[in-house]
Image (cartoon, rainbow, N blue to C red; front, side):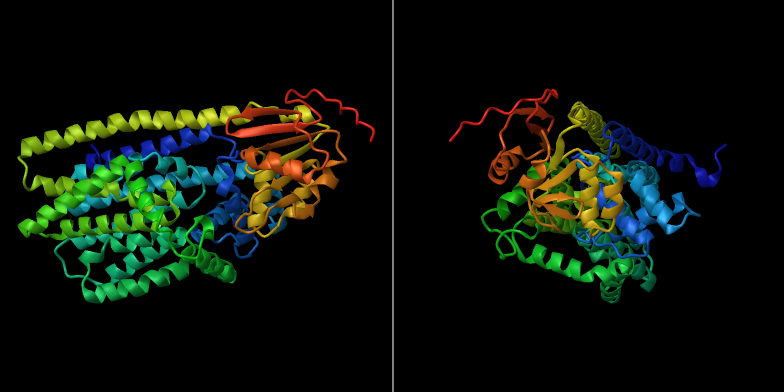
Length: 530
């Protein structure tokens, strides 16, 4: 017999969280190492900023701001070396960054699963329906963007947790009980936590909007900023960096604070909104169905708490799209995507009020089977894609170029390149140690301007002249994913450069001078006397 507190319904609500955690581990397995070019941003940024926190220093990569994730990374690193000195912890992490990142994600995935389990249990308790709990938990399966980005120690994984916490704090408001101040305060903390993970999550503050009275709305408006300040406390010494970044992001119309200072680009913005809806078909279908259900409920004048909650979800999803369209990127939609499952759960309850019970059960059972039928091949396809990327990136043997200068340009699958980008986001804190640990003949060539540093040819924090430095080597091997910029730039900045060979390795391109892609030296052509 199953104990009362572990009823069959409780155990059923563990199935999807366990399955999602298993998917994360499976996807991670086929996409290692994490320093590959499709993984390193921002895994290595968060690793080295977490290491700064271990040392008692403020993180300096605060654009998201992402402070809760960095604190989590620091906590795991410290727990991995509980009795070691700070110097020993730093040395251990820099000597084995990949191993530490694997441990961090191995701790992170079960936390995501617990958040999903809590979400399902909260919906089950608030509505009395097991089906609603399962539908709420389905959210991360309904768009492959969610597991793909939840693989990493980055805001998206924590946004799953944050969205679950906001909903868990909201669901007691469905009960016919007097509102209490502490409900608004808990909600404010959950929303502040979400915003501290990633600014786009501020739209989650709209979820309980129609369930609170005026007094509690005021409390919520005070508690959410207080929660944000609390959960970003370790990053306060870097506030000037954050304010500068946010100012550029808000006032400029392009990606990462680029473009004209017009807030939005009116020629691109409407198309971006349509594109976001058009690229997320399940999200859009549920969004439209939710709007239709709300319109029908208002016409029937049957606006009860679950309808009010659905209105909050729809409003939060709409504002997420409007915010993300300014700098359109699919993974920025995650706060809205995490509301799709809960919206389905509320639609299940709302449609039960007007549909015949038999047809209602059959219709939703058919919808559930359809979602499963769509999800299984999508998971398989996403996992296979990650495996293909890894096979391609690892298929090229760099050891054949021992005598050459190895030059990683934006963006390369290379451990030194990943560590340097992470270190520059940590304000060059660990360059001296890394220069002693990493190969001396490997350089980073930043052919673009980045958030915290400008383009240039670098060996850790030393900026070098590319023509002078490469002249000391008999051959050069360039690796990265933007050859259309790098090759013309090489011709421009290295007077003696010639393109001797070029080969494709997945999304990256290797091009060489003085050697072939197979590692065979090429003699320089004789110079013609003037």
